Length: 254
Length: 257
Figure 1 (spheres, chains in turn brown, cyan):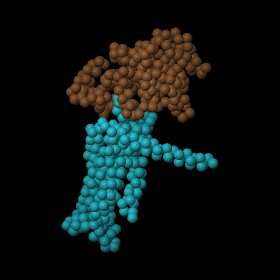
Figure 2: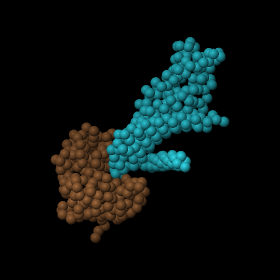
Figure 3: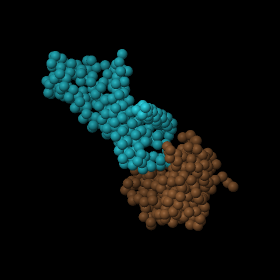
Figure 4: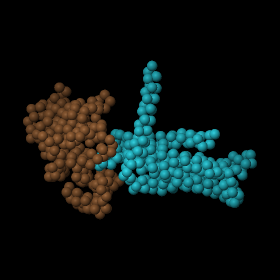
């Protein structure tokens, strides 16, 4: 078996006395799309930020391409980040920069592109997320929520990363726009054979973009399996979550 | 015992924040010193601090110089020492009022702007986004601002010194009836180089303080709009207090013995 793209072993993280991640172990093979589902406050975001290196876990190991990354120096971490693309929940576009400057931000740091070259690249990426070339010169604040998400997606894929992380890609969008974003995610990742790790609580989105799904509850992974199996998991917690019931083991505290 | 525990907790909390601040400063400077350099960012901040603060600094300086002349005239005339007004104005401006008032005005203008901008970037995850785009936020956001602060405040203070002395001159000549020639002569008669250089050293220190406080509080803000508001207040208040505090120590260093 080849080295998994992402491998987490017994990752723990607490904030003060609050245990957020209580021994998470996960593997994501190359080319797979893993979606982590779970309610609000179950540690999904913290888990993602641990893998990205924005938060340092208290203990446990995180390996990217077989290389331990929890204790990297700042400079090595910068190099590692080139493998990553990240789509933030709110887009996190730089509002002081125009759309094309946003999209080509990482590329312009690494290689010396001339301004027309960078713009051309940005327009090409905009086209791949279904936006017109005119958007390139606008500021993020002038765009609608759905367009901001698309620009953010274009920025995440612009530097040709190996792994893309999605933080609630469909939150705050109407159902149609949510589906558009889902399709774009599939288009931009499956076609290129990228590995993706996403977190969401939107089941429609999870089923659409995932090849595998893991459910996190109280800082632990309580279920993993193929995306098709999620509705027949025979796990009472998963069942309650995927069907969105107000009553069940999660809310009744059993 | 509870009382002592509270004091201990406050003291430990204070030490922890001093430590955090020291690490933050150290990281920002170290990361800024190694390439790549963000020349555009540095230039942009220099324009923001240096150029756009000119009106505020100019107005502050001219009225400070003017009121200084007026006040010393009414005070000094009690013991017939009106002739020292020019000296008093130029020494007060270059040594104290130029750097301190410029520092405080810039703390209000720039410290608040930095804290609000970086704080908003923090709560909208733009700082995390920078990291994921292989860019160190310390290097890209913090270092250019600190460098620009250290470089531009002395320039602003030179301007403030000149305008401040001019404000005193205007009042002395047109209101108090001094003759222009002798007034200017006595302005420069007792002025030594160290009066100006000590003021400029203070300015560089104040620029550092203002930028650092703005960036530090913005960088560590949390919890949405309210968090950014708190960060902005903290940045301005802590910068102002640190300016007044360090002003004493720098003065003691220059003129203490």
